[in-house]
Amino acid sequence: MKKLCRRIGCGTIALDNGYCEKHQADYKEREKNRKQFRSYGYKSLYHSPEWRRFRKQFLLENPFCEECGRPANTVHHETDHKGNVHLFFNNRFHALCASCHSKIRHSHPRGEVKSLEIRGGR
Image (cartoon, rainbow, N blue to C red; front, side, top):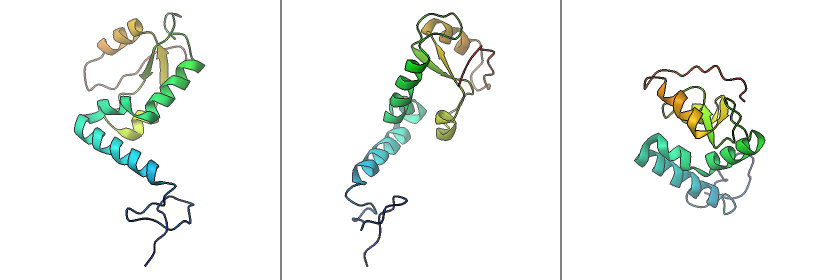
């Protein structure tokens, strides 16, 4: 019995893994990222294509550090995600320079939720 593609809204006949030819690449990329995440822990999220795209766009829209005004090169998660994928991508973010980011990161003990008093954010 033929099955439809597992991708929501796609009515194409699926291959063996449940996806049509068009959505094969998406499936393989997700599987690769899922396996990497399981192998390397949450740090692999920072190397995911989704994060890289988001980070690049966020820094284009917020080019200056919210603390000191120098060029920003770091996107800071306001709430510590602790490896929670949903919280990793759905958070309040701040553009910071490396110097200001290291001051904020080191001013909070590991495991404590970080509540920042930064001027901006998204």
